[in-house]
Image 1: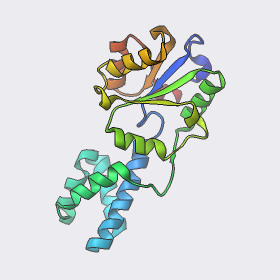
Image 2 (image 1 turned 90 degrees about the vertical axis):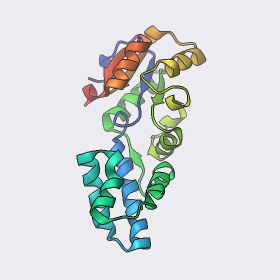
Image 3 (image 1 turned 180 degrees about the vertical axis):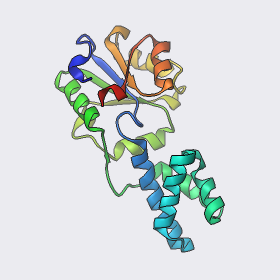
Image 4 (image 1 turned 90 degrees about the horizontal axis):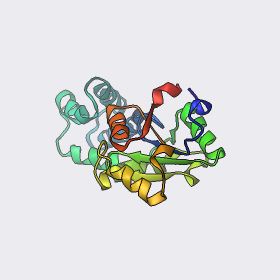
Length: 202
C-alpha cells in the first residue's frame, strides 16, 4: 500500500509514534548503550557486555524487565534503577532516530498534497517528546501537530481524538488513523474512524 491507495477524500492522518513512524528499539538501544557506559564508569562493568545483556533482555522479556535482568545476571545495585528510568526520559542520543522509509514517503506525500498529519501517542509525555525532538524529520516537523494522550486519558479511550477534532474543526469522515496495535485499532473503532495498519505500507 502507498499514499495513492488511500481514499483521496481523506485529509487528516493520525499516527502513533513508536513502531509506526520509527522503531522504538532504536531509542531504547541507544539508552541502554548510555546506561551501560555509566555503569562502566561507576562500577567498572564492561559496557559492551552490559549493553548486549540489556538488548537480549528486551528481546526475550520486554522493556519492563530489562533492569531486573541486570540485577539477576550482573548483581547491579538496585539504586541504579532510578538512573535508568531518568535516562530513559531525557537521554541525549548519540544518533538521530530515523523514520521508516515508507512512513517518511507517506508523510511527505501527505504534506505535498496539502493534507494534515498528526501524531497522537500514548506513553509518558516527557519521554515521547524526547523521542520526537531527536528524530530526523527532514523538515516535516514544521507540518506535524502532536497530542500526548496521557495528558488526557490514554488510548484506546477516545478523549484525545475528540479533543483533536474539536481543536481543528475536523470531520470524522475525513480522518484515517494509522497504527499497528490492538490499542490503535480499538481507538479508531471507539472514535468512528477509518483505520489502516502501518504494516500494510511495508
